[in-house]
Length: 111
Image 1 (cartoon, rainbow, N blue to C red):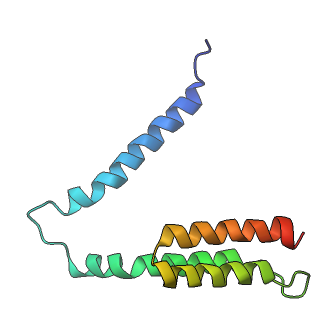
Image 2 (image 1 turned 30 degrees about the horizontal axis):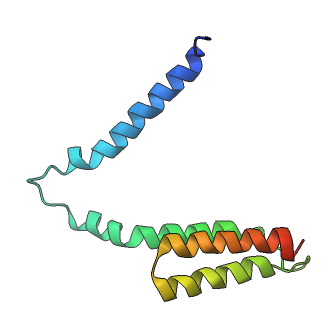
């Protein structure tokens, strides 16, 4: 049995402490008897949509419309994600299904 590398152990401990602190931060800043400020509630409403928009831009930034397949797998998967989400209103299903569809398209159809 080998003793773990000291540097790796220190890194894991630091990450664990930071993760714990980040998860405890809302409880430290806003204890149960204190009202949550309006700007925090506002951020809680708008940030998820902003993050999704940034992810879409990030995922589509290297799509080439000039070279084959001209962005078709990405476009088909994106339309499927939107359609499934409008139909079922389930984020996990729409993103998971769109990812599976995209991987199928790039590995089988547009090979």
